[in-house]
Image (cartoon, rainbow, N blue to C red):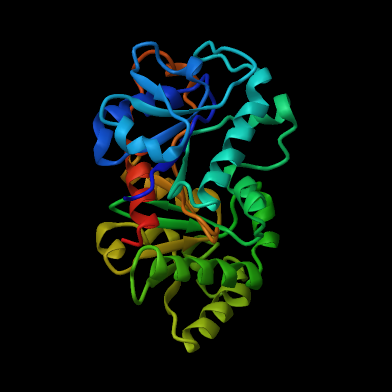
Length: 321
């Protein structure tokens, strides 16, 4: 029997509990998952059942959402985060990772968090989920992929100001990003010979140094070296011509140089079903590609499509499909 996916509660005042309810209602026993959090934070009309072991999810999911109880200090007012609950959000992530690493669950799917709330309420020391998960796993080199049926993208630099990108973009960082992505495509996504498109940093990929020299000085030498080792790499390519339909058909993933260069295309193409996947961990982690949405929390207006896609991809990748 396939082990269930763990879905963390995320920020309890956001839309996480609502989309968990909607995801369970659509999936039920077809893809059992366990929601990890405080049941007081769930919508009042949600049928849930607290379980003692994740293995009980299969028999529970047909009639109620399986819940692994994790008590928080405070109840919740939807749309209004409580700093008292910040540490609980962090602890749930760590507990979810432990369930996966110990082999009791197949993968972890993390609901959105508010980094500002965690930093103010619990002195959260990480820029985001990705970096915290890497620390929990004891690894340093991880890669953030955003994936949908239309496009996969990877930013080489992630949560840093744009002015710091040119200095953060080093040959070592670019090479390890390509290598981690290549390995994940082969072993998790089962693409035998990944085709990887690499963007330039500057407009028109630098125009041979006329608009910046990062392409000739940093990017091209890395690509030439890896091509000689058998990698199928295209680029550096102008970012403004990489994402139309004909271009997307020529590669399996696009590696970009900074956060928005990668995320704007996928969020434009498939905002509702994009999935965040952390590559380079010893376990499978996915997350819906949206935030806490405090403005619509508690109004039954949240779209569960991204959470559904994240749960499905987590199950698929953990099975090596």
